[in-house]
Amino acid sequence: QLLFVCNFRRSLSNAGYIFFPKINWIGRSAEVQIFLDALYQDKIYGVELSILAYFIALFKLNLKRLYMLVFINNLRMQRMLAEVGFVNNGILKKHTFVNSQFLDMSLFQIELEDPKHNPKLYKFFNYYKF
Image (cartoon, rainbow, N blue to C red):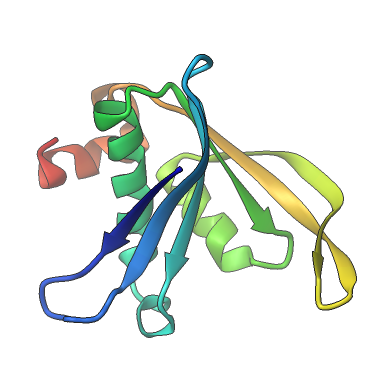
């Protein structure tokens, strides 16, 4: 398990977290979870944390695949993941128990490759200078 705490320069508080709860070092894949503080959810910070998770997984952890489970009714997160390049691979029916009910989850996955070959990520490649 790895946890990265993200602070933005203008703020002293934690803006969010990038969490890798399950890493398969042999298969070179990992689950990623992204948490944003409520103050930052209406801004572009979710995209930035997703890109940062991508670059950490590719360049620092040497992984080849990331996946994320998203609540089926969290449309904003699903749109943000699609913008970064994640693909919806299906729905896990009644996967998570929350507030005394089982909820469906969407499974999103991305194959990690050099950002120069991924048009959705190329625009971020020069900005972050990894």
